[in-house]
Image (cartoon, rainbow, N blue to C red):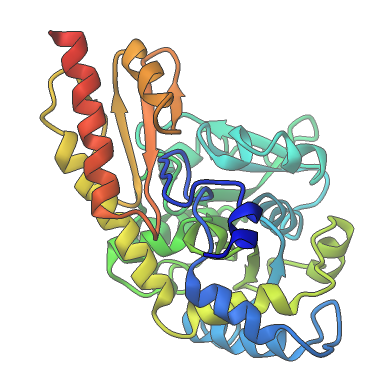
Length: 358
């Protein structure tokens, strides 16, 4: 490394945290795709060759009727996708832990102009029975009309819906005149855990509109709204622009998706991240003073620690407290997490807990 490049770097490239898969850098194969897409001129706002080509890539995973609308970020994908499914007087049923409810600063309600009806769940997953706790009051002018069932795959608690569970929800929702949206920020991790193609728990299961995540799986930026049922969604081109999610240089979003999805990069990266989460859970499982709250299925590990231990660990590694009341924390792994990273972190967890228990 020469002196100029050393001075330009503002961070320690060897540092690893466990707060979010958004903390990681860009996968080298994605970075190479960005370089390939660079240079020369391409038509702006999605009329470029890369965005045209990536439609076939998405269709290879989700079926010939799928249409992808690249956007900047996950909140944008969710807001645009939900807007396309709702009128101003309609509502969305989701879990209390849903990202659209907890982590998007009210954007679906304020920017999307829709009402969220939240349901408490033990594992982050909705069921037909839980949906029915809010799916009522149809034709009652005093109630925001239930229109969308929004589920997250994998969920905010790191659990995954099976294809049969998604199909049951879609059948139930459609029978009541509702539609289904899937927040797929970690869709690749779910597919890797389930060992099935994307279409098996989306298109074939009856999902109408999908938010497909790329940033958490090695992309620099970019997500996509994927329309699977064109009869359910409308106005996507206009909603995307109105919601400030239309990229002028869209080729750089589409080229990343091409690199991610044309081959098996999405699966390699997600499988590795999941495996690192499983390794972390297995390494700390029997440490006295720590309790795993659930078995990891994707790339998130949840555990309860003494609060003073958490505070000391957070000075050494970044991660988030999930539940202040119980002391539950969340650790997230990603495509570039190594076994050494896991072992170093697990040793620190053990060390801090031993100091308390000594």
